[in-house]
Image (cartoon, rainbow, N blue to C red; front, side, top):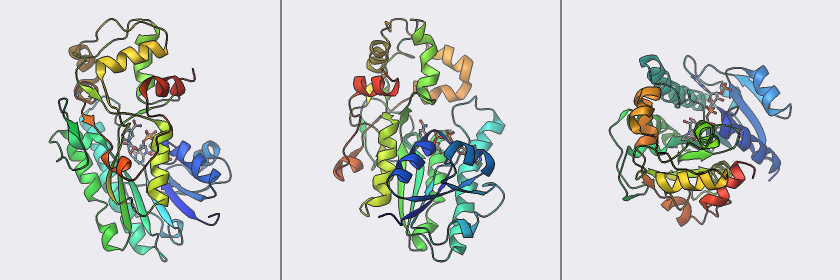
Length: 306
Ligand SMILES: NC(=O)c1ccc[n+]([C@@H]2O[C@H](COP(=O)([O-])OP(=O)(O)OC[C@H]3O[C@@H](n4cnc5c(N)ncnc54)[C@H](OP(=O)(O)O)[C@@H]3O)[C@@H](O)[C@H]2O)c1
């Protein structure tokens, strides 16, 4: 077990930092590919080997991939920002061109890793009503769905290289250090947070520890292949989620936040929050993944450190 080696891109982010800690603790030797190795070493500790890579303009360095057992691909421009044309281009290209450049590095890596575990997102499915959406559902047609389709497609050559490929369609990650909760918290702490844009749409939430658990399972268990929804077994309606967040913070969740207010602040990106989907983790459950925080009230208290 102790001799397994993995290379991770986007390792300095919200998910990556936790994944590096989990895998290092489990005996994996970790190499990371980053835009800034100095910063990566500061964030991740000296036990991690950090190599420079500009995902947009060059193949990933084959020397940082060769001889590893596995590769995890997490790198990507943050999605939660106002979607200007430049931001949309960066969101798409960092993932699509970035993955193509990762594949170019893997093609040159000898011996080549046996598995690629790549991030994708539940945005793949586009907005839906209350019908359950599993991994068999077709892709949506909006901007994020198109990004996810192209992002996943860019991993396809890895199978032709003889690698097992697992695609982790990640939901809304609950974590105290950033991400969606950080964006939701300020109004709730003031006691004015509430259901968003009607409250009936679903939030496909997942606790950060379970995202990490699912990445680890996909690395270590050969049965994980193709898409897997990294979401909790019980997606919550926005209204129920808001009430649970109010309970976790001991604040009422009374005042609804209208969709138009979000669109004023975030523009098109508001649809990530207002147009959810009831995504269910059929693949993880079928493979026997055991959730660390599968119940919303407990998951929120844990993420918020309460
Ligand atoms: N957090 C969520 O709720 C969520 C939900 C669904 C999907 N995902 C996906 O999961 C992956 C990891 O998520 P995360 O929340 O950990 O992301 P994150 O905190 O934003 O970190 C992503 C990492 O990607 C690299 N990166 C950022 N902008 C880049 C750019 N323009 N070009 C190339 N690399 C760039 C950075 O690493 P360096 O600075 O070291 O290069 C950064 O630390 C992302 O692809 C994200 O889309 C996340």
